[in-house]
Image (cartoon, rainbow, N blue to C red):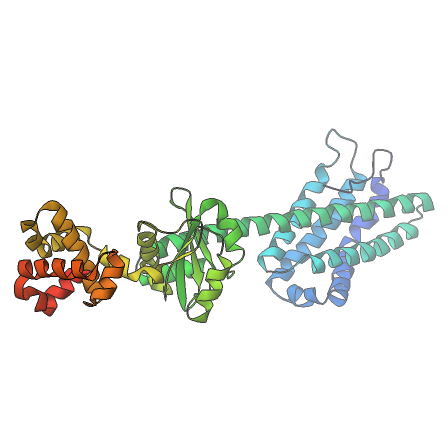
Length: 388
């Protein structure tokens, strides 16, 4: 606590002095509450509702604790009379945070309460004939006491914010896990509601190095979800509404990072975006240290969707070349691949392979002899194109 109470060992009111103050305590509490309602508008409605009973109880507790403090006999624990009032002030601070309010109104109420309660208590003390020095010291204790209550409320407010922040982070993590696991819609929607997270139209999964995740997420939409440990030193970000023209903007913000972006998908189907990003990251010969857009690698993704099926297809359509010698078979396959890519334009095939056009003609004559009429079959041409 800050602003500790002044030392009261040398100052204690006798029971005879405290008795009239205690008798008038309900009146002082009422005057204090009326002043707070009049001067702090935020509390006018609060006192009228269910919270009013708690606040009135806290005011009476605070005043009673103060009188107990200034009238107690000396003991080994000089601050023990403060405990109930400090606990009530701490609870008020937490309540303000739970209600989504700042501490401005509560601290304002403390200031009004200090002034009014001091005015009333001083008037009673003067009426009972207390000397000026005692009343002056009494005032010092009143305002130091209010500082203690204010500090307790500030601590309660901060603790509640920290606790609720941790709770929301945990709920957001659970929501991210549910989305990436592809859980049923009703479970995911319930997780979003617990996290107080407003669903976007779409989500885009982005894989980024763990060390860069915090920097990157601060550049993106505040609703972006983050899941650490998506792989070795890897995090996944789920970015809201990064589709259409917004996709280029997102990729621009990721520039300079070794990131892989999946496609935008309806938010409940973001697992498909995540799976696409993971598969893209596993492709060979990807550029390093830059942003990789999975939309630029759709052909490779399709061709590598079933590696064993692709291997079987190659074995089947290239089987006619097995009749040629190994070296010749390799050159014939290379020539056939270029011939398919350039749609049979001999000059372009020759330039691609750095050979004479007559060499291309000779090799393709051999290929036609091996394949026969199959080179005029559209299905075989499609299969050869995919395989090669």
